[in-house]
Length: 283
Ligand code: FE
Image 1 (cartoon, rainbow, N blue to C red):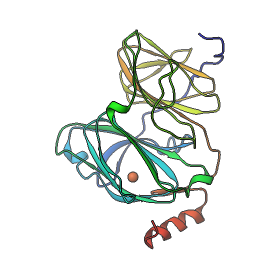
Image 2 (cartoon, rainbow, N blue to C red; image 1 turned 90 degrees about the vertical axis):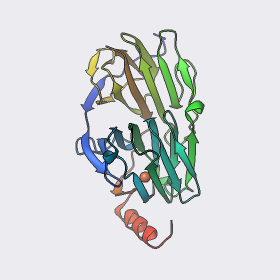
Image 3 (cartoon, protein in one colour; image 1 turned 180 degrees about the vertical axis):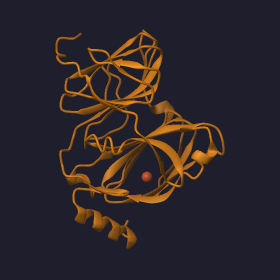
């Protein structure tokens, strides 16, 4: 281990999330934004959806507004078409990512571009600082081919959406609000992955496949569990069998959070203003 790395992060809390339904009847697991884990500053919500039953997803997410934060959609299987009131439209494919800054207001829809087969992916909500909640809406989309894939000698594959790996692979998403790290890591059986994580960041791992041993003390983290990482400047993860997981980190904002459905602001008054602005066509 390099000398400049001092303290390995350890698991401090795990959660499997809760079954939830959102949009027009889409079944999912809500992992952040649940009664058990309300938020992990700056992350407000993490939904995982995975089903090969069309009834679980066919309704999609018809037109709805957002204000005050960012939505990040990352697909592992299937296709989704998105449209928004800023004139953006496209299809997200497996390995592709859409990072939308709702800012002062956007109306968008996300609908499955398929009638059958597996649809699998994640939506993460990343909070904006008070100073940027009313920024102009913005939008970054990256095709699967434009998300860098780092191949390591031991067979590890790291897809880098945001942030930089210890080997220097940098993700395409630009975000100076919370300087996020978002990586999708596939580990062969028995291999180790190590990554620096900024000491002041909050960070979590979500296990997509297999089982992991996390931290210097090798605490187990199971299939489809989220693990919050405690203090430190790096994380070490070992796979028991072949495994795949997300590593996500970001700078906490430490500001008041007021939620109102699709709006996340700092005060209740600002939430009421958001509803009023939306109802009066000011988005
Ligand atoms: Fe949305």
